[in-house]
Length: 339
Ligand code: NAD
Ligand code: UDP
Image (tube, rainbow, N blue to C red):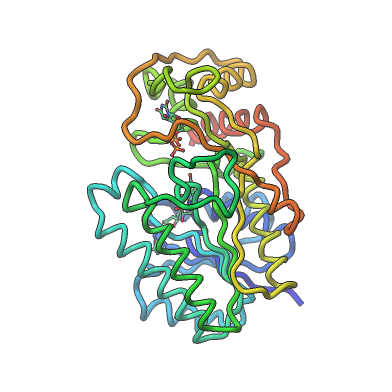
């Protein structure tokens, strides 16, 4: 029988790619999204790629009445993938209560409705931000967490705790907490991708917009870190690989109802800012205008994942080569400018 999955935040960057992966694997998807950081046009892209239009409920997950109604219509769901959240780290510092309210009330409502309607499985979008500036690299799931440095990060730390407590209290409930490293890239079709509003905070959208002439010059934040080439290191994971991991996590939970589990989702390889720039130039043939500037306050010098637990238990690992990911991001940038 076809299983239904509720995808909150399914019109967003990672949610849309995950909806594609779910539909291609034969799941029925219903998206709950209030479009606060996305557009319903994404549904058209998903439909063009998969040939299937996901069901869409335009609702705010913080609205208990609306979400209760929506869950009652979809009480047959086998699981929920909960992406819906606000995610701009800097904005969360200036609007902390908005971030806590949106991200935590949404999660509380989703959990209460899952319990009320006996929906057993939740996959939660957590982040490598919970590790802070870790003492040992690569980070494993049992690496001690550091205090979050922003209200956004704090919503992920608290969100993980809320889920653990809810699962402990409700034997029928299972969760996978997925700690994403740095998701980048777009669907190879160029039909869906990341659409940052305003000036991008993240490195790759800034790179593609600079190459496209929308931004004049990329500022590279610091070249004097204690890393092999002096630039910050991150673990950049292709968004399609990330989407596939959600599918693996769901299947794992459906076949092993084991309480709460946590997985790092990264490639296991640290890449410096300069290495990313050079790989982008090689992969796309675009020359990038950049300058070295001061360090960005609060930046962690280096972090990358040990993703071996996900490989061992979920049978998942990152597969897409970095140059293909950068090409997909560039294809999305150029295609979305023509719209
Ligand atoms: P995104 O902003 O593209 O997608 C989030 C979606 O949630 C948007 O479509 C938005 O409209 C929706 N949304 C937000 N609040 C809502 C609410 N109250 N009710 C209904 N819908 C709501 O972000 P993304 O990059 O796809 O991130 C998805 C998840 O992954 C988030 O939880 C984010 O914190 C987490 N995450 C993202 C990254 C990253 O770098 N992109 C890294 C780690 C974790
Ligand atoms: N970065 C940069 N210029 C930018 C944006 C980011 O040099 O305009 C660097 C940043 O210092 C960090 C890396 O790129 O070392 C990744 O930054 P991003 O904000 O994408 O991810 P995060 O720091 O949250 O992991």
